[in-house]
Image 1 (cartoon, one colour):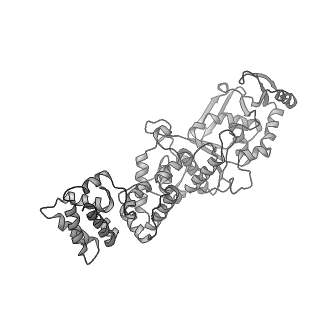
Image 2: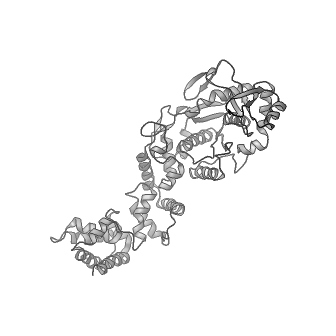
Length: 466
């Protein structure tokens, strides 16, 4: 059975590169009827945190990536946190085996120069006596002479000269295994068949292969996919902008659109707008691009906008509700009248690409005294503003049917008068009704606001100018 794993370190937020790797792992497992495993690699005791782990798990779930085995649901190869595996003694068995076969040794370090090894020994008793005397002791894996090679699913045959590597620390002085050792033990014991990860791990692979071979274990299939780059074609980092999944969530990118865009970064498909979870059967790991993908923030927003406009209105409402709940704490009564809310979202989504901007566009429809833009304030201070507003009030009040075509006809009738500037009239109405000069379509906005709200807001402007 195909078994793949995503193994983040809980030392920060989930990076978009990690989310993309997890997506490709998930698609590969599902396509082949395999298992997708989540493992938390928290042996960095100084930097790992429970908060970070919770954040990563929450982001992965938001991405729609559900796992078959993991720290929150367990499974037959647990525990799925490396710290818990340390406590259970899993790694000690293989440390002892390597030392017994003289493939690894205890390294005792100088008390003054912490990087200088003053003695090597295969004796636990001797190493322990030094440790009790205050010396720092690690377990180091011996790098043998020769070359280490493997076939990478993306890059073909790779070969490394072992002389380029120093002996490898596999157990730190605090007793915790290092990444390169623990990952080998865990991948083997968990039956991982394919290791798919970023090419920044490429130089770790020969070190890990040496440990596999020293223990007499078969290798998994390795695949190192190109990193995601920023616009300057250097690895995507904070200097380019937000890089965490949480950042894009807070920015108002929706999960389905986010995963759609990540899939485009390496997976060549005929479509641009799609749900990758519905294209499982089209996914082929071997056909992922071996060229670096450039992260285009504007393209991501565009993809998100396409999803916003195409999805059913009910679905958009639910997405908007969740975003408001997670990222907006203000006392705005967004959803007292859900039919009204849907009408507002319908006209607003035509001009926006993120939930954040959708909220900015929609807010004036729900707040009677919204914060007015300076340009809008200036328009309402014009000498002829009261007359324009009064003309609108009179014309709209006489409407028998509150329909868009009737509203448009009434407003255009006023705008056609010789003593009225059409452009200024439309701008003043936008400012008076919504406090902004850029809004959804004017006629659609008036219709959605309804007769009561429209007349109330226009009357309020008249009172303020008296």
